[in-house]
Image (cartoon, rainbow, N blue to C red; front, side):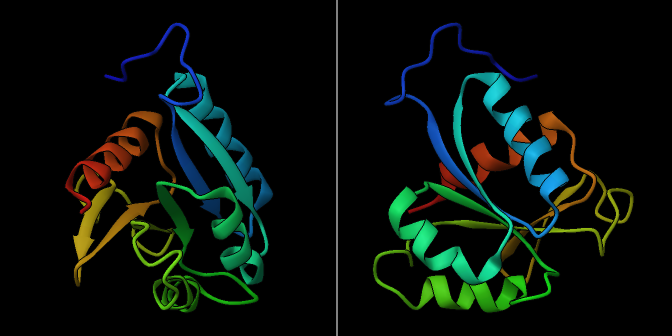
Length: 137
């Protein structure tokens, strides 16, 4: 269960960048995360702007779609991890390629990377973010 904050301050909230080419998905994630009071969310629907947005927004974590038309999630992650300013930011890949049933609970690890299966419910989403942030160096 998600613990809601009654009056969160900006300094308490975690900064999340959501990169996905589907505006309806990024809007839904933003609304769900901000509704908890635990997150400040920036969304981006153009993968080619990921690096500049990550540098200016300074997220603590990035949710990154795997399949996008301009540059796929793997290419974007490689670009982010090759820059000193963004290489430390943990990434959770988001994919409709694997169902929640196939991944057991919707959040899984493969090849050293974290993944979330679409569609994503709020509890799984928040749990995944907190799990990754708690283990990030």
